[in-house]
Image 1: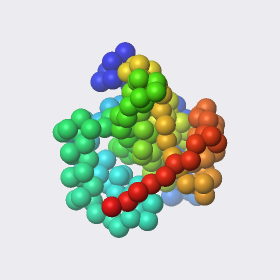
Image 2: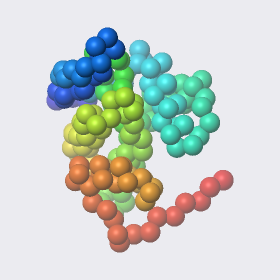
Image 3: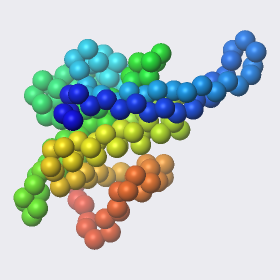
Image 4: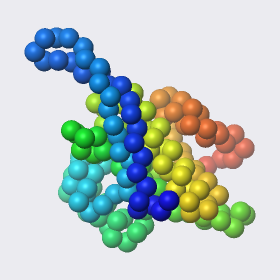
Length: 177
């Protein structure tokens, strides 16, 4: 299966509040996981801006759009999106290519993972991670790597649940300009 032709359907149960009768209705939700296209850029820009705001950055949709447009144009990253029929794009995962000298292989940095708060709890993040894993296998890379804050209890739980291993053997350092 090629990257462009991959489509993954996720059937999940979603609870919706009825505005007329105050009753709870359950119906299946289908999330389609696909590779980003240029026509998705406006919706993705809004999601990406929300992701950045979640990490305490100032909202700037225009800059988010320009940043993503450059990533797509330059093929700097691989972006998969989750689409729900009535809602459009509801989540994304962005991967950046790195290289491991010791393994002499490419490795993918899972840098960004976000699902709209209205759609969390429906395993969409798991589906996005699984698509990223499939991409790592398809590109014959050494795997995926990521980092998250120790205080991100939901994210840390998700990564353990999706078979990432916590690296207790290495220290990671940063230098900022």
